[in-house]
Amino acid sequence: MLMDASTLIAYLPVLLAGAVTTLELTLFTLVGGFVIALPVALARNAQGSVTRWFAHGFVFFFRGAPLLVILYLVYYGLPQLPGIKETPIWFLIARPMPIAILALSLNSAGFLTEIIAGALRNVPAGEVEAARAFGLSRLQTFTRIIAPHAARLALRSYGNEAVFVLKGTAVVNFITITDLVGAANQVYFNTFDPFTPLLVAGVFYLIIVFVMLRLVKWAERRLNPWAFAAPS
Image 1: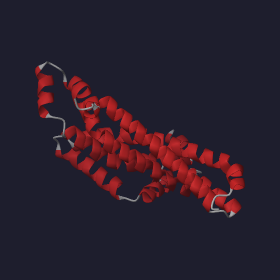
Image 2: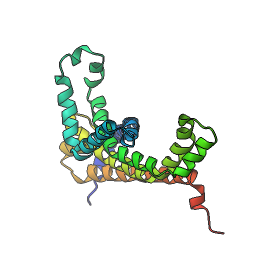
Image 3: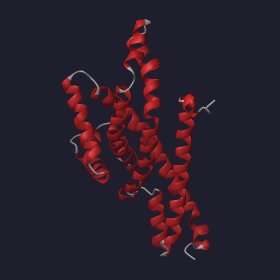
Image 4: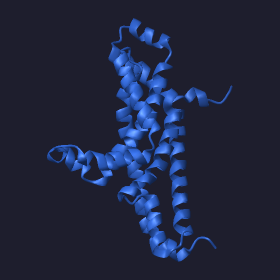
């Protein structure tokens, strides 16, 4: 029998605590990645060549660099900046959790930028022209016409990125954060039972992914009800 019941009962709280940390990292990273990616995506579609090249460089670096490299650069590099310890920023980056969220958010933003920029480019031009013909301002056109349509186009890809973010959080145990994988390793080091903690961690990941995909499906039904309507 691969799973040991006594190990499961004794160390389930540790694994649950790791799962909670993984969920926190995932949620904060999704929010942080979106906040970073949105202005970069707008720059990606801008008319000016300077802003476009900046956005292209951002995507090229953060989408191409390994996540662990980004994590190490932020974790070990930021404290080395001259004068950083005398600024309010040090209060945040002195702890591993904000550093991990920042690194994960930057990595996620590299992918989200292309998702958002592509969705914005694929909004039908006729809808934008009609909104302007009705006298809507640029901001009103964006918030009422472009953003909702782009959200419908980007939602499924955003759901896939959310799953990638969840799995990417496993790198944080390299900077002393005990996430779900770190908790499973901790149980293994204490019990020398590699199967029980890893199987339980795998089940937790599958449950979280299942819930994520169901939420994406629910959002798709809300945003695209006609796509799921039964044929008459």
